Length: 475
Image (cartoon, rainbow, N blue to C red; front, side, top):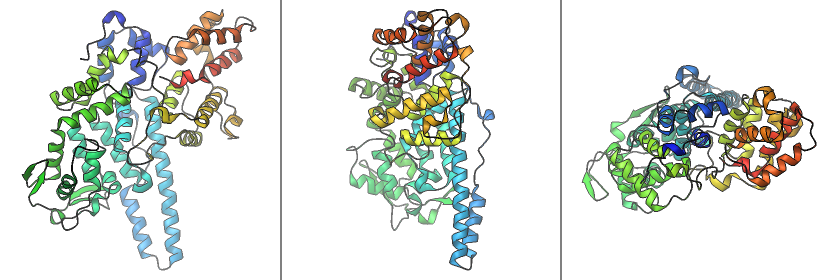
């Protein structure tokens, strides 16, 4: 199971595949650098990239103390009109704070030197699927995001325990309201159904008993920090998964993660996100055994997957539909331009169905084919045209233009001397995968009437033709 890819099969196409799936893609130069390392060293370089925190100072957010002061002002207001004014000011401040947080993370994904860490952060964000639409606290959402970043490639039980104490999660699943005389079952249910086991692998009694163990979890309003309330905690005897004891929340998580089903569930989620949908049961079982044997070490598990021949199978490579965030990051990296203006970025990801910090429900984004519809595909084509041309009218009249594409670097003079050279160079940059003959014929037909050497407009139009295809939506 998970036999390593033979060294002789390693090439720039497979290096590009690794960079796309373990991160957000790159330029041909970055791909070739990875290809020169060989498969084992290339994977090691991604796993050991080292954190890049110093490159990304914390975003400018509405801090807990300032938020608390707004609440005090509202409470002290003498009239309803004054209270409405305070609430309006608070709402505007929180809105600005949330926009800053989104832009901070999106830029971090775009410019990170540790792409796997950010890709794993995106994975866990979808897995734990906490939305600011209910939390309404950008500071808490940032803290959760940082927890994914710090613990997301470590041991899963550590991350799961951290999530049980996470302020945003506590608010999201109403855990802060749970007390010994009235346990709230929301978190206890979701920690098994969505976060660790899947439906059908626990009973209603397990939920009820687990809920008692998670009582007393609180958030301090002035600091947005976790606090354990001993007086609200049910310290009595519980029976969970057939075992009896005075179980704490951490004990419940230990009992959950000891289940082979938990390892299979997490293995399936990892494979679906990083490799392919609908993994065969043999693969799921192998991943489960691997996770149990290494203590749920996510980085170590991904290392085995990224080195395996299965990861580079023809049925895996260039068969995953890019999610909107992946599309945006991979596109701007490929074109060597910054992310578009904040407003365009926000509107585009919203139109395409993936706004970070706002997953659609507790199950997160469905991914896969759900990313594509007739309208979203057309929007992707128009967005590609906008990024390439900078023409505001392409996206419905926005006044913001994009950065200039470095066409002299993307297609130097040596690549403009004939159709085959230009097509091969651009096709690898854009698709990272061999062209189908019918597509090559389309591009040759476009260039047939164009004089050599090809001009910038010709190069730009050819890239746009390539990006305006269903083939470009795959990675």
